Length: 157
Image 1 (cartoon, rainbow, N blue to C red):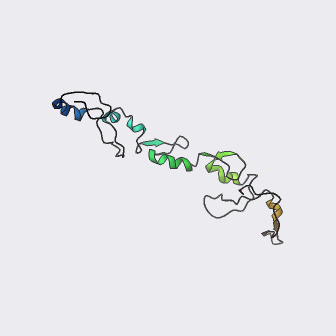
Image 2: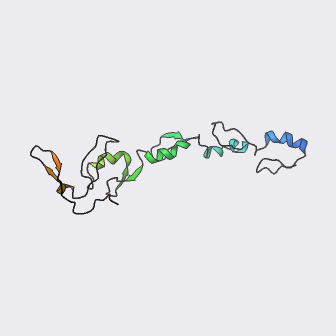
Image 3: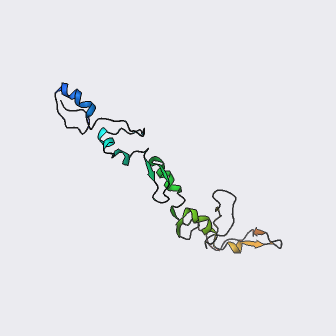
């Protein structure tokens, strides 16, 4: 009879096969990190399982933070040192952690800050925003009613 474990090519009589099963390299093993995968005994021994185990500890290649592999995808989307395009439309690539400082100097931002999120929520406005706004004698800014923008806003569809 042949060994029933996938990948094993051992063929032995039934009495010898019972002795082979506990030591078969292709037999199922429990992951020492308690993941839900079903590794083989050989992959645990030669540590190839840990290169794909979701419970293995990995380090972010951008910020060097240590975390479990299954959390890496979510971390990559919000890694503060990860690069992304300017959210305001100037096409500059910069680190997420530098986005707030960039908002102060980005030529595509007309400052109207909101006290929410990560301190750089600014309303993206048309490039001719200044023509739509007037400043009162008390220094307050008001939107001019009935003044249409000269061109479409950059976020319109």
